[in-house]
Image (cartoon, rainbow, N blue to C red; front, side, top):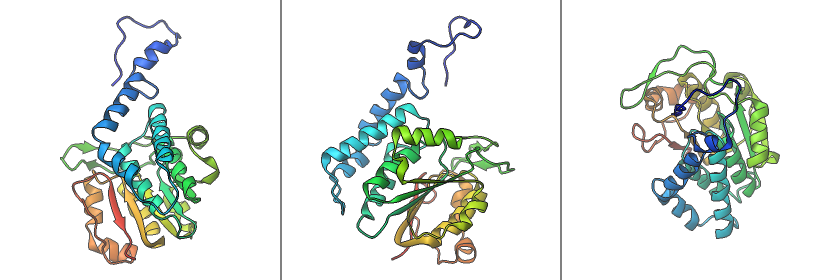
Length: 275
């Protein structure tokens, strides 16, 4: 929430560097303080697990601390819609796929590019590829009306969460590893049918149930055995209902309904394709 100035700001006058730092948005001291607080509280367990994990690649304690530093730096500078805990869970699954051939990661829904930059750093560690799918124009036109699991209404308006392709590229160049990224611009129903790569990890942050349906239908069958599809939309009731629908899995996706731990309870859902 943006605070109101004590006196009217002169027309055309830019806010001072001090006032920008004291706001709550990206680049502010408030944002940095919150990140550090969450690092020591909410995200602490996942951070410790990451530092202690045994991965099938050379990833020293120093390299892991450097990655955490880079993640926090990106969080301070860019608006994102994930927690450090969530991003580390996804990266953990990426690191565990190392040594099993080329690691291919798909991100559906990049927003400002905060998650894209972080994922690209993890993908570079395993020598893989990151395929990024987004309209790069925000949420498309829709008439969907949703609610949180606790019943609060939720509406995704056209253009929300927009990150233009040029801007996302710049952010990845500054904070991530652009050399591992390939960007696919357009609606998911237009771009995903052309994908034929075997996938190790897919991350969906797509909000609309129509988008979740399209992405899951196209991406889940492409997962390698033991591959993982994540959804960051587990807080939306319609997402829970879709993933709980056996007919969706059997008729739309063409697989037996998978186990989904935390369905109806957790925001980040992890769906593993059986080996």
